[in-house]
Image 1: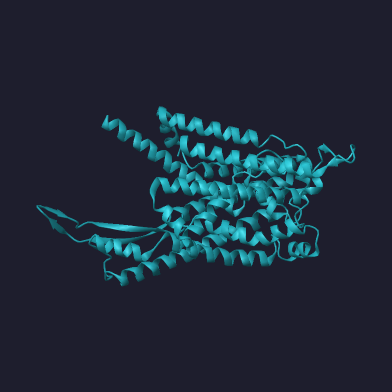
Image 2 (image 1 turned 30 degrees about the horizontal axis):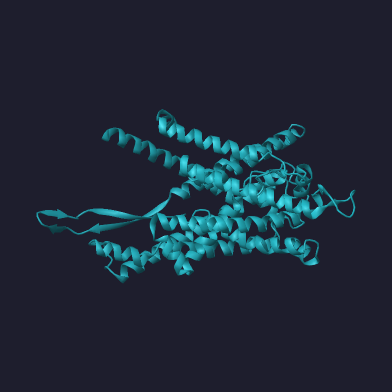
Length: 443
């Protein structure tokens, strides 16, 4: 990894891309510290800290993935999440809507149209999330404008409108920054924005933990345990992320004119965790969605309090439904990404076969069976990562009190995203370095 970074800085073009990426990330972090008028960062932090059992768990998720911006009430409080949710919605709708499915096959023009539609949906979702944040933190908003009826009384609705406008505008700005990173930087801008937000939040939480431990030296062992377990989990995730099942494919020899083609042996790689973090994102969204609706439309009702107490985050039903949805979306997303019938047809079309398996339907059935087994192991892996780290971190931080604060420093989604983005950036840097060497050879 260090050697790859060293070689990347030797190339002027790649060095410019890295500097451009760092500049965009710097702008993102600066925006994460610009306060929104009417929202007090201190009161929001206290509200999030006291909301462990009050039904604000979905807001805690938003704050974590935005790098703590929401807890501070800053310009980029919503972060890139509206765009991610819109991308997921478009990806699912492209399966069932023929017009969107056609756009995915129209090349560059089709991708531009889909991106434009995704932006519009992201703006709508940002408006909805901004309203949800205002409703959730209604008691922590200070009216800024005087009322027409009473000059000494603030007009809260004008303040709500201003805050919602700033939140939506900040989300659009983050979306624009991510697209510029993708276009002029070194990798996927959306992934990098989330990566930076998670690392920033984890770093801030860890710094607060050391500050707390300075007055309680016995808690240092909890912090060291947290760091060791985090490194072990990273190694565990990397091991599964690069693990794959290779299915041998043999191509028969063919004579065309005066030349002989084929006769080669290759393989089809099927990754154990080919779905990445998507099943956990889908499952978490589905499980948290009812709680978000209750908090949005009836924040002080008995139903909201009951759901938070019995079905909220950290409760047994929450984990049960989370595991079930992870398994469901793992198999659902696997069917989208890998089509055994198409792979079987392509193998047969080019004169290939799997040793010991007849061509045609037997091949597709064999590939489907292998893919289902691999997906099952991948789903088990995701379920373990979704549950075990969170439970261990909460235990180390103080199960009920969360004294050290790192009970939510790294969520399951955050762990997978950090590892996946790091490996992705490493591969992209290597690819760009290799392309630069090829260009130099051709010149």
